[in-house]
Image (tube, rainbow, N blue to C red; front, side):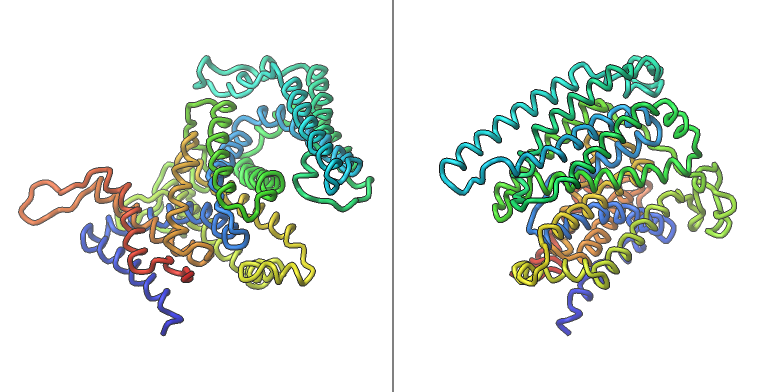
Length: 498
C-alpha cells in the first residue's frame, strides 16, 4: 500500500480539482478550463523537467533556467520572422568560439598550479588573459548596428529599417570576425582552466574544429543576403519547425556553456551556485532587453494546421479543415493549444523512455542514487552532467518557442514561467521526473480553474450576477495548492523523505 500512496494522493488531488470544477462551472466551462489547464501544465512541464533532471543528478538549483526559456522564445521568434539578426550576429559568436577552441591549447603551455609559485603566476596570467579577452571582444563589437537589425517589423519604434541599410559592409564585418577570433584565443586558456581539464589532448582536433567554426562564420557572412531571402521564402510550417530546432539547439549550447564555464567550478558549493544563477537571471533579462528592446512582441504566427479562421466540429474534421479552433461542448477551443498539450505528452514519454531504457538514462538514474559509485565504475560523470544540463536547457528553450504563438514574447516571461515551474517541481517532489509531470498537471489545473473563477464566476441560486473572484485569487491559487500539498506530504507528491 505504501508503494502506491503517492499515486493515490495525486489522483485524489486531481480528481478533487476536476470534480470541483465541474460542480461549480458546469460541463461546458469546466471542460474548457481543464483543457486550458493541460496547456499550462505542458508549458510548466517543459521548463520544470529540466530543473528536475539537473537537480536530481547534480544537486544544482538553476535559477537561470527561466532565462533559457525566454531566450529560446526570442531566438525562435527571430529565426521565424527576422533572420537577418541571426545571420549577422551568429558569425560573431562562431568566430569567438573558433578562437576559444584553438586558444584552449595554450592552457597546456601554462604552468600547472600545483607548485605554490607556479600556481600564483598561472593564476595572475589567466586573470590578465581574461581582461585582455574582454577588452578585445568589446573592441570587436563596438559600434555594431544591433538596433537597425532588430527593427525589422513596421511596428518597431522608429519604423522598419531595410536590410541593406541595417547590415554593415562585408569588409567591416570580416574585420570584426578577426578581432573576435583574437579575443577567443585569449579566452581559451581561461575556459580550459575553469573546466578543470588537466589532461593533454591531441592538437589537431581543436585546430580542425576551430578552423571549421571560422569557415562557417565566413560562409554565413558571405551568404547572409541569399540566406535571408531563402528563409523568408519558406512556408510558415517549415519556418516554425526551423524555429523549434534552432531554439532548442540554442538552449542546449547555452546549457553546455553555462555548465562547463560557471557551474562546474562550484559543485558542492550550494550557496555560491544559487547566488551565481540568480545573478545570471538578472543579467540574462537585461541582455534580452538590450538586444531586442524592452517592448514585447505579438504572438508568433502558428503553422497552417491551426491558421484557418473557422471552427471544426471534431478532430477528424480539423485535420482537413485546418481550423484555428475546435468545438468542445459548444465552446471554441484553440487548436494550437492542443498542439502544446501534444508536445508536452511527447516530451514526457520520450524523456521517460530515455531515462528507463537508454544507457544514458541508466547512468543518470544511478547517478541520482550515488554519483560517487558511478564515477568509481569508470564512467565520465562530468560529461554526463554536461549532457543532462544540455538536455534540460534544450527542453526549456523548446518550451519557450512553443509558448511564443500562445503568449507572445516579452522580457518578463522567463521569470513568470520559472516561478511556476519551481512550484511544480516542489509540488511533485524535488528531483523526481514523474513528480514534475504530476506537479505541472496539478499547477496547470489550479491556475486554469482560478482564471475561470475570475472571468466567469459562480452562479449561485438567488443571485442575478455571478460571484466573481479577484484576479489575485487566480495568481494565489498556485501557491495555495502548493501549501496544501506540502502540508499533506512535506517532500512533495512523489518526493522522498530526507
